[in-house]
Amino acid sequence: MSSSYLVSRLTIIDIWRPLPDWLGGEQPYDLNSWQESETAIALAETLDEDAVIVEGYAEYATWRPHLAYLRDPYGDPDVEMELDGVGGVSILAKARVFRAGVHFPAFSFERHAETEGFGKMAKRMKFSVVGLPHYTVWHLYEPSVDDIRHMEEMEKEKKEREKQEKERDEQIKKVKDEFKDISGQWEKDRQAMVADLARTQREAMAAKEAEFVKINPAVPAGTPVADAIFGNP
Image 1: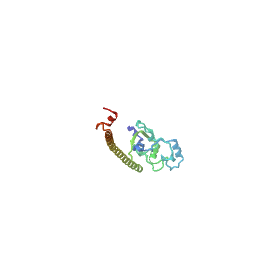
Image 2 (image 1 turned 90 degrees about the vertical axis):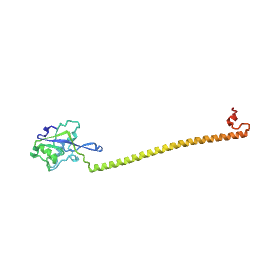
Image 3 (image 1 turned 90 degrees about the horizontal axis):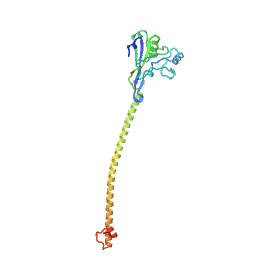
């Protein structure tokens, strides 16, 4: 960053914060740095002198260009834009700004207060107020109570999912092992049935041969029945 940014001016850095993937990965953190819009000026004229416009609420639709939303991750960090309101996360200001009386008003100043009122006051006192949309400072992610609760639920779901996957894998392995054992037993049973069938057939043939020889004594003992019937030599 050039030192010229710090001469007689107020410089605002674009602030973003990293987020978990389930929250989008990243997010603009400070939305109080903006350029004034005609809509916001017209809105301010309708409000009481002590009223304060707060960005982000439906009743204060200002349609202002925000520094954070103009960020390009690959943009030139030296590019600057004029600002009217400023956020308080990262302000670079020379001491002469404060010596001149610019401060963070705890009251309504041009329908704004605190940091946004600070930016308005600096411009009223002729200081240059600029923002660097492509010069990004990352703010630490601080999970909210809801975020922590959600992360706990996610961790619980993860453990339950891992438990179910482990049980499923064990069940699949058990079925495969049992099928392998059953397949082996089936082969043994098949071989035993084939052997029993062959033995039964041999015994039946031997009985028929013995019966045939008994009826036909002229046939020599031990002659196969089929040979005796069909006259095979």
